[in-house]
Length: 166
Image (cartoon, rainbow, N blue to C red):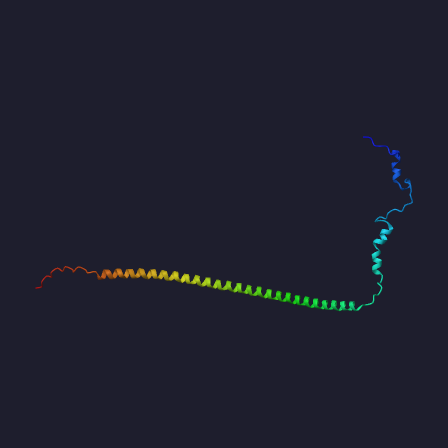
């Protein structure tokens, strides 16, 4: 595709981009962010802020507003102080509560350990008593057998006649 000819030689196109190569129409250029006027206006708020404002006469409404503002500030300060006190009290109560809970858990663990030791001791005694009872029952059984042997009628011994004495 062939480009249309603009009337400027290809070697001269660069010159048309240069400021001296363009025809000047003496029209003011629009300001850009880098122009001097933009820089001045961009920072002009600093110079305005530094200048003292003209004193404005205080009106009755202004003094009322200032009084209300001061009252609100005092009320806010009191409310914030109360909030700090409540937060502090909540913190103290939380610490106390958790401390007491930990103590309760520890005492319950000790009591449980003591009870478990007591149960173990009683189970040991129970086993000893069961063993003794078994031995006593065995002894009673032996005694009953001996009594039965002793109580059984024994056949009368056949006595042989005794020789006569002369």
